[in-house]
Image (tube, rainbow, N blue to C red):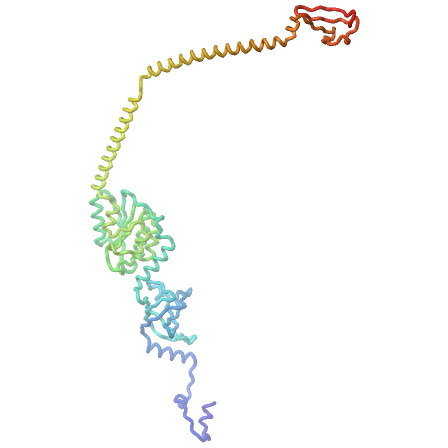
Length: 418
């Protein structure tokens, strides 16, 4: 080996050797070497905060997330195991600036240096705000906020469901308002946790149970005011989808007027406060009585106006309507005059036709053979052929002929011809 040659006693010149080479040689396996490196790193960098940009983010079927953290000069591989990732309130994305807490270690199988992330939050904006915007964008793209799917609120519901904490001031305020306005209305309260771990699941389950029960006409879901963290259960996707799936109209009443949650966007109606939700779902009895009185007064006024208009129209018709007997006499007189005129025209036309007939008869008579006979002429027929004889040459001596005169006929025999 090289070190043996360098250390040979016959070498004329002593050579400086690395410190580890002067010791007795002890070889490490790669696994042992990586274990030493891993232990050294973890002992020195077992808890550290880093900032960087996410790239190459991907989630494996195991649920573990692998990505790269980088700045403008360097980068390091990072991993967040499934259990830590599920605790995040937002979804990491490529290009996102984040703050991470974790430890630096070595993955001994490949000798890869990795940053194991225990906690993560967006840099420059809160994780809750980012999660809110991400979920809002996702549900909007699926149509959960579409106005056309919103259901109408019943005018005067018989039964009202409330999903909220049974110990909060919000439920007491809602019950007081409903009782003051319509004490005979039925109220079904489904008590749930409204903040903390498991609150979103309880709220979603309460909404589903009330909707399936068929015992309520409308549902109020909400709680009193609080911080963003306190109201966060109403920003969870499970609550949003439960509201969307409800078969009865849902009023979201979370926090104060300035507070907006995902539940507000999915619900059929949004009330600025739980108190306002109770006022929205049940009208004031006095207001209804006043409204009914106004409607009755308006209806009576409209009826009276229609009656007055009908009377005026009737009076106008009466003025234009005359005695029907006078109309009948007028029509009878006109009928008599028309009959006389028609008869006169008939006789005049008849005379005109008779005169024309006489003229045509005279013309026809002038052309009649009988008229010729009246003037002394006669017509000769050859017997028995009954042919008119126009030429004497057509007759033979002894032929019989019939001669027609103006008055009477004669049978003759031809004795000669010229």
